[in-house]
Amino acid sequence: MPLILAYPLAALALHKVAGWGRYALATALIPVAVFGLMFVFVAFASDPGDPLYAIGGLVQRALIAVAFGWITITGWRLLRRTPEGEH
Image 1 (spheres, helix red, strand yellow):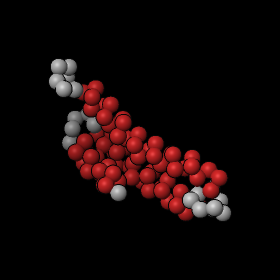
Image 2: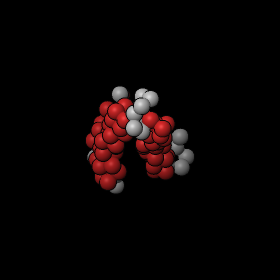
Image 3: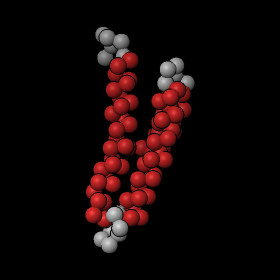
């Protein structure tokens, strides 16, 4: 749950940085995708007999890819903006 709260807080912080406006908007929308995938998984794919149970693992992996993909992309962008010589 803390990761879900980190998205809007990060979006607010990124919105204030020049050149990060569109990325801040995308960051603010990530919780919608995460909650949507979580709902699909819990409601339709988590228990035997659920309609999407056969692909429940794929739904779960999509959720992980969205949630943690943001961390990877954000880190990559931040590293690209770091001047050389600073660590």
